[in-house]
Image 1: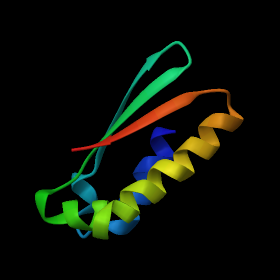
Image 2: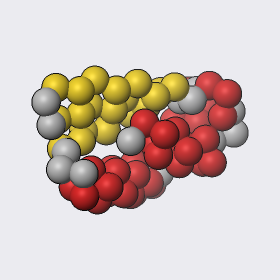
Image 3: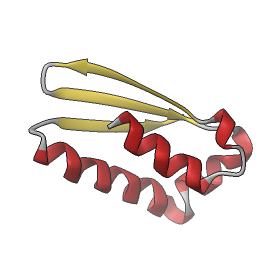
Length: 75
């Protein structure tokens, strides 16, 4: 899951070297935290949060196929 979020984020931003993805797993629930450079925050969130919502949707679909519940936080 981390690799998927990292791949998507690095292809969206101008500073891919500053993309950081961490995860914390508790049972079947996983919390993924995505950090990007301040200049790239708008690209990752998108207009009215559409890009962030799309990232979350893709991750949720993959997680459901694996029987997991995933939350994606963008910081």
